[in-house]
Amino acid sequence: MKKISLALSLAALLSASMLPAQARDTKLLLPLDSAKGMKDKEGILDGSVKFYFAGQSHPAVLEKISTDIANQKTNAVGKSDEEACKWVYLSALVQLHKKARELGGNAVLNIVSYYKKNELASTTDFECHAGATMAGVALKGDIVKIADQ
Image (cartoon, rainbow, N blue to C red; front, top):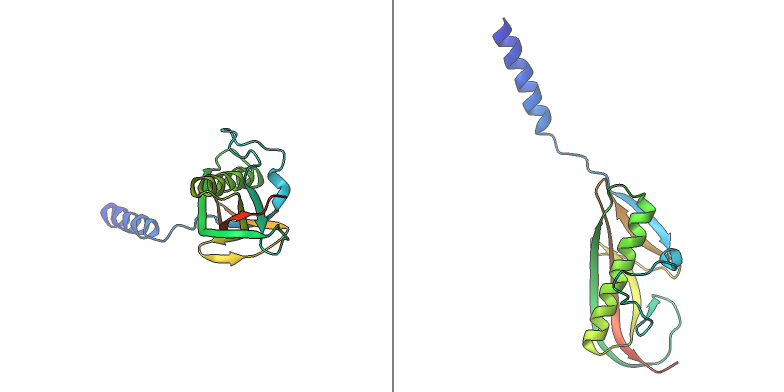
């Protein structure tokens, strides 16, 4: 009898462990300026590349160079969702800045949130997804040369 009970318990445990895990994936929309007072640790965001989200007015475009995607993740352990999202958003901006400088651009235009290739155009908010251990932001934009302001 004990062998049958143990076998049934083991079978129940194994079948429960085979169920798909339900990972948390909380979608947040946060203000574009929520990371305004934060500094990237490498000091890359120095103002030499300007950022304009879809729908925002910008100076005349002299040359479109490329379209690029920054898909960033950050460790969210011990951070609030909002704090982790601010850091990963800043990291995505750093990546776009680096790419623009590398290609000779001085601005990134038409920036949209691009999480899992789903575009969200907003002049006020960016999209972030937070889980138990990671947070992610994806931004897509056009790298360009704009006229001096």
